[in-house]
Image (cartoon, rainbow, N blue to C red; front, side, top):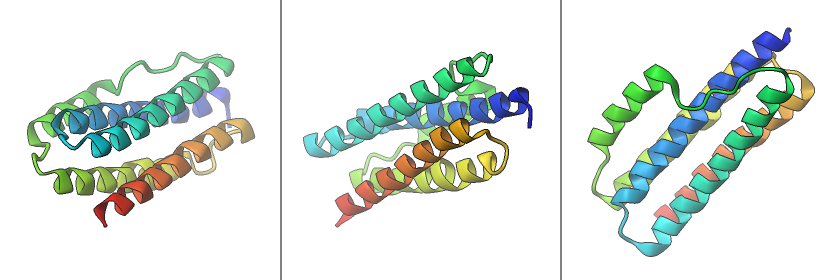
Length: 142
């Protein structure tokens, strides 16, 4: 495994994290319930902290971190913005689905076996945060 490979994998993870941050921004704009809005804002803050950690690791490896979700991510985000539900329960369901699908499963598949120990730890923390965030949102459904 070369630093280039690790940087590429981390940048893909970083772009996905930016997609999550932007997705949560769209949800927050639609939420009216103050406690629910605060929960989403807290999750978004933690996603931003994870993005910062990933970006720093990319720099430590001599790479240049992505600064947005990339072209395909921008297109997905644009489409998502047009389709954000108005119903708060549906917003929570959609957020859980996104965290499970992209934040956990896709991310775990992406970084499997291609990272040095320090990068792997950062990626695992990011994935575990997504898992925990999805669980927090599931609790709000009850």
